[in-house]
Length: 460
Picture 1: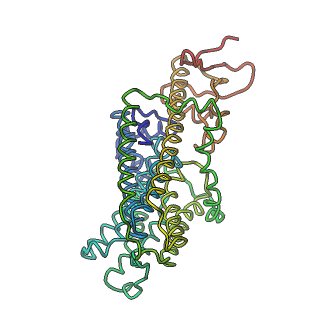
Picture 2: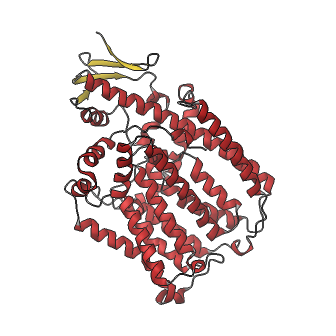
Picture 3: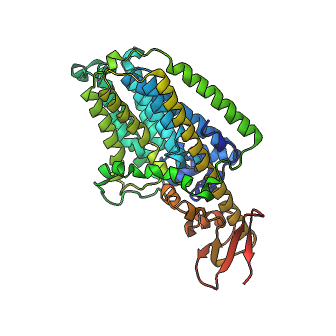
């Protein structure tokens, strides 16, 4: 419901154009030759689908995000029991746009699919006793899921290694079966590590010629700064504070989309009401387990450790996407430990969940509307520059100026649509000459006419 406005034609931005050219000319072999095993699954699949039809990418994102949400619900249910708490955690992850860039920007789909495989592996490890499958089968599947996670995005590399700890924890009680570590299913603890080592060996065995060099220096502060900097999660709410950005709440909506959202909303609230009325049996899960807490903290440290060895953490919203499920697991543990003998009444839960979901959905509609409007203007500007053979120094007048109306937008994206390198990637892809953003009076002035919905040259 929250992400339905994303459906439609995706538009490429910045680094999308480099990968588009690579995949269009060489396919998967060309990508592997240039970039090796650096995110091939997370990059090639969405770009290839986009080149087939620009409308395929949003569908892929929504399906992957939906599956990841379902997996998170079952992981929370395995570890903490009940329906309401896991449902609330899943809804926060599903509906709030905290990591919106991962779902809107084409090549950052790699974060979404990496989380999908990671949560699938975590669920397998948490429920391996219930599955009652042969240990070799579980080991191979867990290792394969760890490989797929790393092939999508390396952001959860260390977290995947440490996820093996959940194979030692008995889900309901939180006790640890140390005696099984050296025999039986205790070997599952090493399955994610095995998968990560397999990927690492393949990564260095097939290094591409153009592989990005991200590891510049050790940045130990990132182990903690990743989390105390999560105050930037509030950035997605800032568009509500400006009348210019609030205008994009229903941007691009059609009558059919409005009817679909309304129908989904009614069905969703009805299903939420039925689920909230179900009787919960969480007695086995209410005893706070320090072992569960230690395992969750290990995942959080692992998720931030990748930035410590990779040169530091930036506040791009796409990098928040893999952290949110882990933070929600910690939140679930805190809730269970604080309210061991108390359950939230069903009517109270339903009211709170409904208000939260509506707030989350509307905030997502607003953020997606702004993204779609800005990417449309950005691509139209690149097309205008290339078509009119504009070159040299230019000044761009963005009217309305959403960067000024929502100052935190650049921080949440990691770049601005008006930055020179971002614009030149789109211009050069269309066969135009690289331009320079300048402020001098001699620069060519291009402004956006919101009434005509097009870019125009301003005569001096």
